[in-house]
Length: 197
Image (cartoon, rainbow, N blue to C red; front, side, top):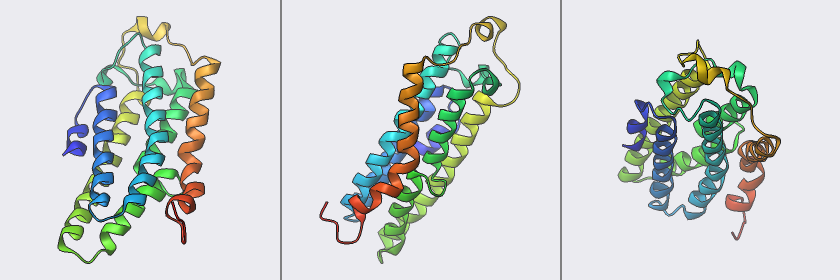
């Protein structure tokens, strides 16, 4: 339900907020299958890429004079290249693109649900796959409306746009590293063979 709510939102932060609710749904349904460490693993990876998305969204909103309506964005990729790169990394990690942190944790949730021989687990697996499709859809939609195409903003905010300060850029860089590498380096700690986590 949260994933479908995020499909047609036009507020930049609301799309990310509904995405958070959707990812919490993944964590809860794997807890229902007794995959508590898998849920905690996804919580940990999710913390990095969702923090990256929210801070990147804040940087975009700050750069365009507090505008949050996606219908008034567009073409920001050239004006905010570093913010775009951070937003892109966060979005593809959220989608579960292979070898990023979201891939390892979200796909493990779907594997647990798909490999459990219960009708309820198979139903949860089906809903999880549909939700993963919706997540990809609204993530691509968000990237497209905000950063690609021609600008739909008024001229004044565009002339005042500015890139991140070095402190903020460093913070986004650290979160981007976690969004990329926490899955591969953290999976053995959380859910590896013989772990006592």
